[in-house]
Length: 88
Image (cartoon, rainbow, N blue to C red; front, side, top):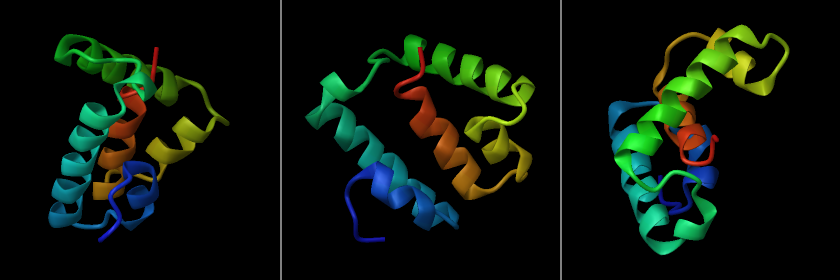
């Protein structure tokens, strides 16, 4: 994976190494574009992650539910991390 934008990298995450690069890009994105993030603190980020998981799991027919229904994968985990950056 050579792309730096986490949104563009998402579909290429398929291994632990890809996920590590994705997390690096996610951290860089927060540092460079904090205005695009809803959750700036670890506390807020983890709270949003939990809320997104609970909401996505129970709201069938949504994109989020579709992501979770595919089962666990490195890409699913990357989707969860990315969603928590903007979920309110």
